[in-house]
Image 1 (cartoon, one colour):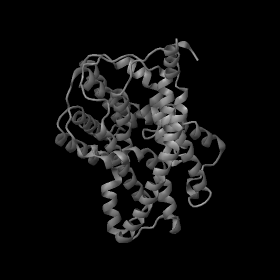
Image 2 (spheres, rainbow, N blue to C red):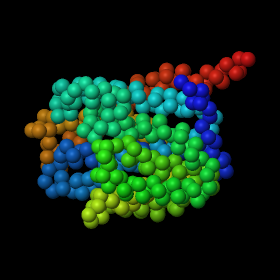
Image 3 (cartoon, rainbow, N blue to C red):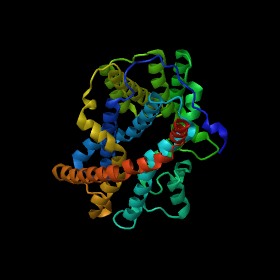
Image 4 (spheres, rainbow, N blue to C red):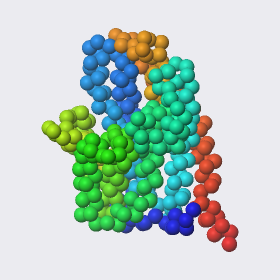
Length: 379
């Protein structure tokens, strides 16, 4: 590996909020985000029938935008907690230790489900399975849900992590004007993504191609730097929540006539990004939110494992019905959804404790920064 990778990532100017790095409200927000996606998948698998199904669909059709919120959160949190002295190799190891062991276990569970209760998620061929194992399957639109269907977003996250050392080097320490220009450009690219995918000579999907989802991540990075470097303080939580709800509501708005351009997506991403910034600002300025409570923190820490297994559980629980779509009257549908939720939460707890935490400890022993620090102390 080249020696350039051992150089520290560019340092941002440390003139922002003086609060601790930890942002507990964002941890709690991760759980709310997971619940949006859980509700969307209950809709997709059709737990609810009749009018209840119509109402559930009205509320949770846009629940898939929870992934957008995850992408923004990822960029924001990484930029907020960025350590200038950390090398790129150390950063990549930390991110791999965070997501890869659970990804492998999730893929294994998906393969078991595919040959037992949920044959419709079976992946044909070793190539797409191998691509999913290596977290590159989303680059081929036809393979976007290979392996574990929920892991397509991890393919995007893996790309974001790969590019973060370069992104932070390019934007850290820039003026507020430059950072706001980058933020505006990111929102423009969000709206243009479907059109870009439509005219691209290389097959791309606005929904799953990592390159086209990168602007959401970059927006999170830039807003965090604006708060840290320029002491920008976002609008209050009431306004941010209202804008986020508006963004959620217009996420399914159609494209401009005769084009693939979707301004509604930019409103969604912008609203979500301001919500993330407003919650972070509340934490940074010692203003508590309910998302910072102990229960929300515990649930937020389970959100990644929950996300990876919940769709497998939802589909497995519903597999006893024809075509796997129960379409039940609302009291029975709520009961069935509660069963799927309880199994998903229990499995997430086991995986978080037994795999996620333990494997991070094992893998981070190989952190090159820590080894280098230990050698320096020994001299």
